[in-house]
View (tube, protein in one colour):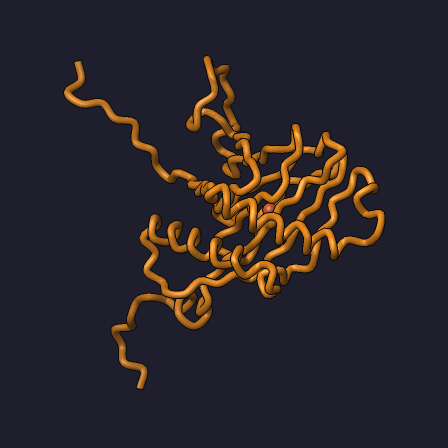
Length: 214
Ligand SMILES: [Fe+2]
């Protein structure tokens, strides 16, 4: 009947998923975990329904330099994938989320950045997932029943995660974390990435005027 059939995926939302080599992940995570545990207040791990967050400068600490290198390598992959021509991207914030039993992270975005993401240090039993939401309102106006979930018919996607996994995504993409059901702490590192010379090189209009101003 048809000479050709295609389903064009317009405006896809990309989440980049990287798994570190096992040996590197184990070594790096031990360094990160030890540093974070030394930063916690005494008894913090026994407080239930809590999300401890560090300051936003972890990427400047010596214990996080290897992680920062990994992150920048992944960021280069994402910007190459998108064929971004802008030079120079930097980590603007990097912080740890330490969820005790019952601790959760509500839906949020990472404003004023181009990319956001998260890296996993410890995901105890039952806590190895992250939720993503389609931010578009229009697809939710009509919601028929589906025979099964697909990337095209789901407004909510759960991604399974594990230690050593790094996720990068557009900073505007809404995401959240369910309560940690485990007695063990769930440890992840969140971060933001932005163009270094944004106001200097990206914000100015890209066209040239046709009328001389001098
Ligand atoms: Fe986040």
